Length: 174
Image 1 (tube, helix red, strand yellow):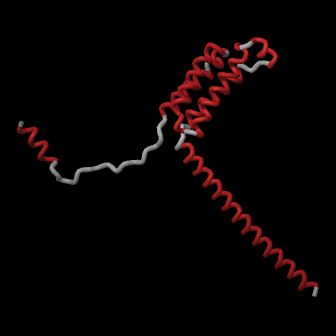
Image 2 (cartoon, rainbow, N blue to C red; image 1 turned 90 degrees about the vertical axis):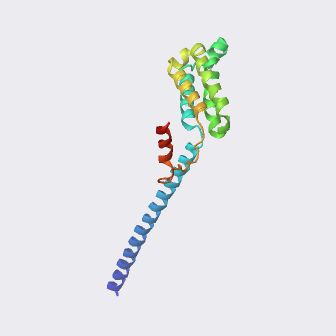
Image 3 (cartoon, rainbow, N blue to C red; image 1 turned 60 degrees about the vertical axis):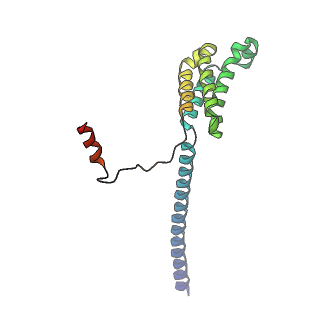
């Protein structure tokens, strides 16, 4: 009787191990499918919006903001000179994020972002020591130049021998 209980326990453990392996394999397949779906969604999102222009504009705004951080007491006491970095950097970040949500506004916010980047050269620590200004102008110009991807057109090719010789012959005769 004891040997039968041991044999039943061993069989039960084998079945559990097989079920566990099958479960982990199915779980892994679900995770991979979820990652594939997420990657496909992100690719579609990236291709239907001025994504890289927004990324560069946000990076430039963050750089301007980072290099102009000062204690709030100093910002309040110095007035516009102290708050310019916050306003320009925040405006550049906002100008980079809005077209990701509303791509039809890319011209307006691309130009605003590029102008804010150029103004940051004068008003905020040389535009984040030139790095923030360059990134902002690059991102703003990429945003203005971006256009939605057009569907590919099938090229028309003339049929073989469909009058290609007649045009060349008339030019030679003239």
